Image (cartoon, rainbow, N blue to C red; front, side):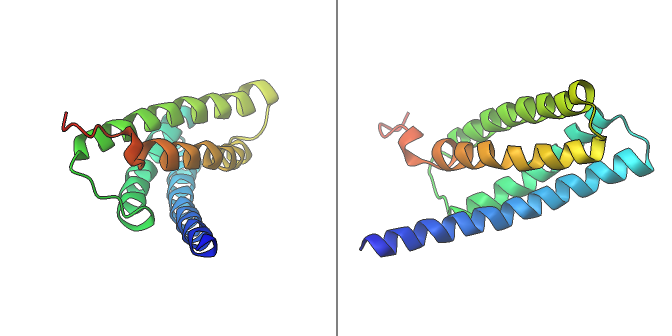
Amino acid sequence: MITLNINKELLKYFKYCIVGAIGAVTDFSIYTLLVKYFQTYYISATIFSLSVALIVVYFLQKNWTFQYVTEQKGKTFQRYVVSVAITYLLNTALLIGFVQIVGYDVIISKIMQIIFGTVWGYFLTNFFVFNKKWERTDGQ
């Protein structure tokens, strides 16, 4: 019984990582294209690349990883928007810190930001966005 639950959690985490990798590749590819080939300012590039990647990731996580079905789709999306806002703030602050304070290259900084962003992204997704305990049971 315990082994079955552990295996389900490991499978969910494995799926989360696959979807995260898809999101990271999407984010990094768009960011690199914008920064290196279109000379877009790195902050503008990261806002756009993260936006595209987070939309892709939301639908994959909802439908494949967590197979999350709810009557309160609007509430789930609201939690997602909050988690995206937190992710934007943390990722952008981290990127600015790496580039402007530490002095790292914009591409190396982006790679590091993606790695750190995965940690808080999993926490927000698993415990806040796709978690039934955040839904009201009284239909409101």
